[in-house]
Length: 131
Image (tube, rainbow, N blue to C red):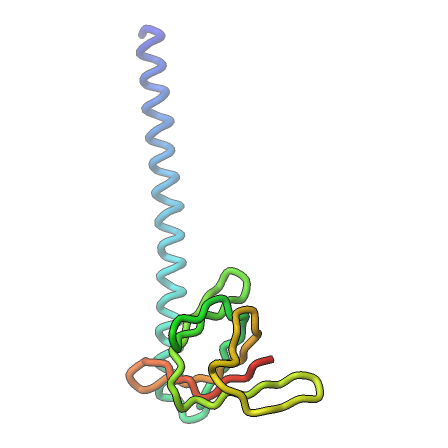
């Protein structure tokens, strides 16, 4: 075999190994993400029908406000909630506890958003605390 042929064969072998390893890693990562999604789906179904767990709290820093939709961030995770007009908003600071309003929420505020999962899988905001 000539040097040119050996180089081509080596390149093809390396490319084949790269495709094999890439496919394996991609498939493994896909399966892990699929498993996480299934666990989250199962949890939401459970929360929507649970008689014991009536609500949960989403906690984070306000990074965006668009209309009545608030986006919370906690590190790399982001979560958006639509806030109905009738949702109570409270402000808690050292020595101060007060009923507040949606308009008092600002980017950079830390919120605790009390929510529940409805039987159809939708989220309903029950109340907000500005910390």
